[in-house]
Image 1 (cartoon, rainbow, N blue to C red):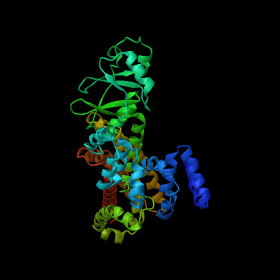
Image 2 (image 1 turned 90 degrees about the vertical axis):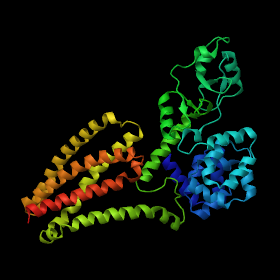
Image 3 (image 1 turned 135 degrees about the vertical axis):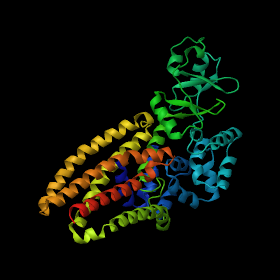
Image 4 (image 1 turned 180 degrees about the horizontal axis):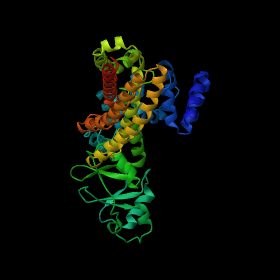
Length: 445
C-alpha cells in the first residue's frame, strides 16, 4: 500500500490536469478517501488547492475527515461560505466533532444550523468532553432496546438497521441507563419470545465518558467485541467506541509519540509555510541547545586534561554514542510498555534489574572490545583502560536512566515520548563525558 501511494503521488505530479482529474475520480469511485487525503497532504499548497477543486462537492466531506487537521485548515481557509454550507449539508455529529478542531466557532455554528435538533444534541454531548476523553469520540449509531425487549424485537431491529462494527444490541431502562448487552449471534439462535435480558453477555464491560481515549481504545481492542458502550457519570448510555475507531486512535497515538520524540506535532502539514514550521520546531531546538550547553560546561571542567591528553577529545564521541544508543533502546521499550499499560509499580523494580543486567552484559562485552581496539590504535593500554571503564559506566547509567526517566515523567503526568529522549541524551552525555574525562585526569595525568 505505501508503494502504491508513492506511485500515485509520482504519477499525479507528472500528469496534466485532465489525467489528474481522472486519477482522483477513480479513487473517489472506489471510495478510497484515505488515498485522496494522503495525496492532497503530499502536494505543495498551490497544487493542493487546485486539486481540491477537482473533487466533487458530495465527496469532499469524506476526504476532509481522513486528512490531518493542519493540512485541511488550508482548504477550509480557501472555501467560500457557499462551499462550506454545501459541505455541511447532511453532515453527521461525529463528522463535525472530527472537523471541529480545524474550524472557528462561527463556521461550526453554520454547520450546526444544517442539523436537526437531535443531531445538535448529540454534538453538544460529545463537546462536553475534551478530545482526550472517550466521550468526545463516541459513535452515536448503535442498536438499543428497552431492557424488557424480547428476541423478536431484536430481530425486527436488525432487519431495519445494522451499523458497521456492530455485533451487539444494548439494553437500557426507561431513563436511558445502560443495563446489559446482547450478542446478535445469541439473539439469532434463540426463540422469539425469549427476553433479551436472559441471554445478555456477563463479560460485557462499559467505558466511562471521562476515560482517557487511548486507554478506552485499547480496552475495545482487547475486548473481543466489535464495540463497547460509553456511559456518562450517571450510567446513561451516550454512545459507543467501535473497533474501527479504536484502531485509528491507537495508530494515531503511536504516530504522535514518534513525532513527539522529535518535538513535533503529528498534525503538522508537510507543506506548511516555512515560517510556521520554523516556529513550531524552534522550542525544542532551544531546549536541545540548553542541554548541549550543559554538556559543554561539564567538558569545560576538564579543559586542562584535554590540553594534556588531546587524544581524549578524539574518543569522546564514542563514549557519548554508546551510552546514547543503549539508553534509547531501553527508553523506547519502557515508553511502549507505559503506552500499553504494561508498566506498573509491581514490576518496575523487576524491569530495572532486568535492564541493568542487559546493560552489564553489553557494557562488559563492548567496553572490552573498544578498550582493546583503542589500546592498539593509540599504542597505550592506559587510554584503552580509561575508555573501557567509561563506556561500562555510561552504558549502565544509560540503562538505568532509560527506565527511570519515562516512569518519573509519566508519574508527574508529562508525556515521556515528548521529552524523554532530550533528557536521556543530556544525562548520558554528561555522565559519559564526566566519567571519561574524570578517569582520564586521574589515570593519564
